[in-house]
Image 1 (cartoon, helix red, strand yellow):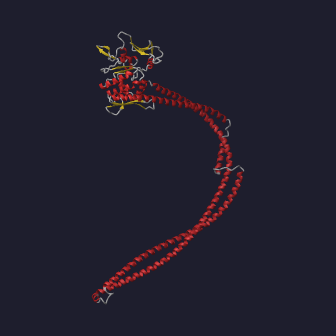
Image 2 (tube, helix red, strand yellow):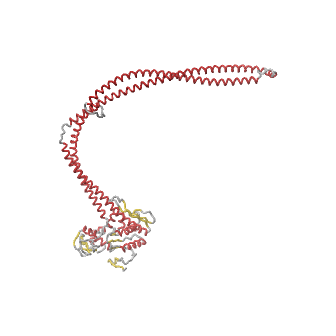
Image 3 (spheres, one colour):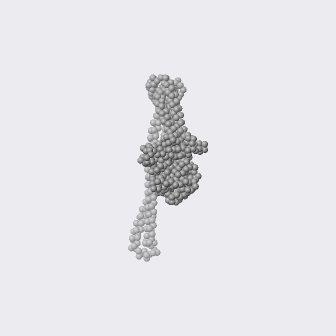
Length: 613
C-alpha cells in the first residue's frame, strides 16, 4: 500500500483500514491507492482474539486471530471483510469496540495534527474522548438511559395528567351539582336556625336597650355628682379668693402709707437742700468774716454746709430708691389684685354654668329612669316568647341582619327547588373513577421520583469515578510537567451537568501561573509538551490494547523531546498494550522491548529496515 502523503507512513495504513480515511484521503486519492492495471486493492489487519482469562474479546469467534480486511474498488467504493465475510462499517466499529479500539479517538490513535486538533476541542469533547479511551462510556450511557427512561415516564405522566384533567372536569360538573344538593340541605337547616336566632336576637336587642338605659342612668348620676363636687370646689375657691382680695387691699393701704411717708421725707430733704444752697451763697460773701470768727460760728462754715448738703442728697437718693421699691410693690399688688378679681369673675361664671348643668341633669335623670322601667317590662315579655322557640343561643347579628339573611335564604332555596337526591349517586360514581386515575398519576409520579433518584445516583457514580480517575491522572500529569520545568493541573468542570461537564487542562511554563490549554495562549512546543504530558499521564488508564502516536515531537525542543521519549518508554515497559510511535526526528532512545523500524524514500521507493536493539 502506498502512503499518499509521500512519507511512506504505516500509521496512515492502519488508519485507512480502520475506516478513518475521511481525515486522510479525498475521493481521487482513494482511487490512486490501487496498483496500475488492477481493479481493486486489499489491506488486512490481524487482531489478537486469544483468551484473556476465560473469555475472548470476541466470543463469537473461537479463534486466536481474526482477519479484518478493507477492499477498495477502482470506482472508489469500498467494503469490509471479517474472516472472509462482508460486513458493514458499523459492524467493524462494534468489532473494534470489543478490543477497546476507537479509530476516531485521538487519545488512542493520534495522527500528525492531533495536538492542534486536541487543543481546539471544547472541554466537553475532551472529557467524552477521555471517557471513551478509558472505558467509562457505560457510566455516561447509564445516565443517558436513565434520562431516556425519565422522559418516557414524563410523557406517560403528561398523558395520565390529561386523562385526569378530563375526568376532573366531569367530576367538577357533578361536584357542582352535588354541592348544590348539599347546599340545599344546609339552607333548609339554616332556615330553621335563623327563625330561632331571630327570636333570641330580639331578646338581645331588648337587653341591649335595658343595659344602655341603665348605663345612661349611671352616667347621669355620676355627672350630677361630679357637678355637685365641682360646684362645692368653686365655692371654696371663691371664699379663698375673697380672703386674698381683703389681704391685698390691706397690704396696698400699708404700701400707700409708706409712699406718703417717703414723699414727705423727700420734700423735707429737698427744702433743706434749698436752704443750704442759699446759705452757701450768702457765706461766700461773708467768708472772711466767718473765718475770723471760727470760734464763734459753727453752722455757717462753708465745709459744714457742704457736709450737710451731701448728707441731704444721700437721704434723698435713699428715699428715691425706697420710692421705686414702693412703686414696684404697689404694681405687684395691683396686678395680683386684678388677677384675683379676674379669677373671681371666672369662678362666678363657672358656678352659674354648673347650676344650669345641674338643673338639666336632674331633668334628664328623671326621663332616663322612666325609659329604663319601660325597657325592663318589654324585655320580660320578649324573653318569655323566646323561651318557647328553644334554648338560648349566641347571636352575632342584629335582628334586621337576620331578617335579611332569611329573605336571602328563601331566595336560594327557591333557586334549588329542582335539585334531586339522585345527584349524590352520580357524584360518588365519578369520584371513584377520578380517584383511580389519581392513584395511577401518583404511581407515575413515584416512578418519576425514583427515576430522578436513579439519575442522581448514576450521576454521583459517574462523578465519583471520573473524579477518582482525574485525581490519579492529575498526580501523574503534575509529575511529568515538573520534569519539563512547568506546572499544570487536570480537573473536572461543571460536574453537576453531564451534558456540559468538561475536562479542563491547565498549564504554566517558565514560572507562569497555570492557565487553560488552548490553541492561542501557548506556543506550538508548549502545546505539544502539555498535550503529550496529559496523554502520557492517561496511558495507564486507557483500555485499548493498541495505541499509535504519529509525529508527536515536531514542535518540541531537543530536551523535552528526549524527556517525553524516556517517559513514554517507561510507560510502555510495564504496559499490557502495543504501542506504535512514529517520528521524523532523530531517534533518542533504544531499548530491548522497543522495535525500531525506519522507512526511507530512496529514489521513489520505500525502503523499510529494522534497527537492531
